[in-house]
Figure 1 (cartoon, one colour):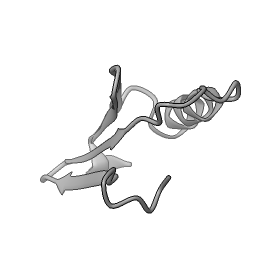
Figure 2: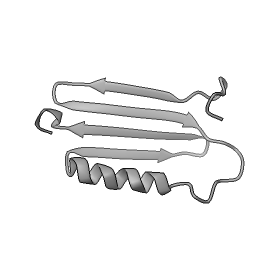
Figure 3: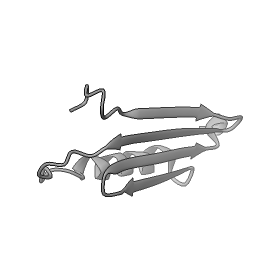
Length: 79
């Protein structure tokens, strides 16, 4: 549940001279996993490839209770 104060979604954005870092962290639902889960991640990866080619790194951490992502886009001045 997205508005549950006991399970917040944390979003952090940092910008450097020529890079951008986007980090998310949220707890997972303990219920049954939606069979369509993961399709959105595949679409995001494809879009990142099209937009940034080799100028990004996406890390996804799918732990037991926590889901985290870290996206770093390099060379943002030249994009």
